[in-house]
Image (cartoon, rainbow, N blue to C red):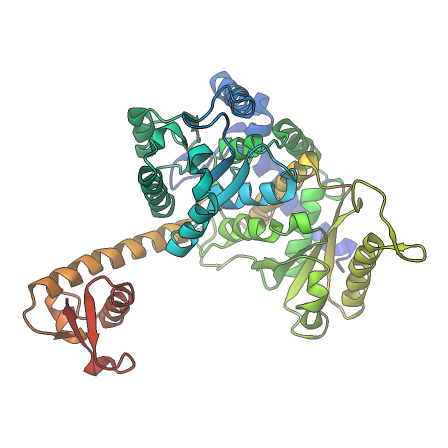
Length: 500
């Protein structure tokens, strides 16, 4: 990064405020006024920082309960009715309830885990079918994690209903296999309690989805896979300690935030390209997409000014990207900065030589260094984050590093990193479409002759939503839901719709 001492000096007052803001956050300041809640994911890895003894005890006891439960599953002390042990996990979640657990599973799950994990992280019927097909012969020994803060989020709710039906189809009582990870008292929690599910673990209102990996959301699936969750928490705590130092040049999260601010002129003018040079870190860029973009992508600042802040994040892995988009990174539009994630250890055992004195790991390191140098020579900036190896401690540290960098950067640009009004707007719009679909079907049910799209729109009281109605009836038709389309799909004014 090409910033100079004068740039750093100019930002010093902003960083002093950012360090103070972070300290207040950790003490329990209300950080999300939309929901009147604290933001306490830092307490998860250091419970002594929690603002009350009750919260400290709750965090500590939850971790202990997770470890005890995982141990009982692994030993068979808790087992399914028709098998001596559980063999698989279906984890159902969306957003932070999926991206964190998926990243950690890819990075840390052992080659032969005590339970193999499968993720349903969308409401795509074909995707759900694929997961159920993978475990259909082992459904009687498969645990199901349902992860949802409210229990009403459509994607995990839909996944749960479909999976529940699959268990019923094999005459299995879903409650004997199901674990709820949710807010105490939520609809999902009440369902799990009334149906006597296998276990329930808490989510907290002071932990947002994108920062929930160190809560039960991430720790339960990790522990069940045999991942060392204590080491993850310790790595995150160590990074929190290192990034709590109010000294810009000795604080790694502050250096990251400084680099982001410099690269995008404090306005997100350049994208963040994340390139981990290790297969096990493939999903890190996806994890960071939510953490960075949902936290920083805001229309207004804390003073109510329209600022349209944010940093776009994308990436894959090195050296795969030598053959994908590095050509554009070096010679195309200079609208990005790169973050290289370097891992020093090639593998656990010695590497054979590919040629005299050279291993495949030497090539990987050479590609990272060569790409970094080639970009810099062409005035394209980059950050390199180096870890000694991929293990529970370093993955925990990486998660904490970016948690805190996001918090510091948000203060620099004067936005709230801990709410997500745009996400809620999208959910409301989707609900409105489903309500419109119900009205369209009612209109078709009462019609005696085929109707044009315009007639359907008028009869349903939605004259300005012809395009949405077209997409609804087209989708129902394509899936054999009783809707028949007559005419040319490409000529909307001639199309007629009838319910079969």
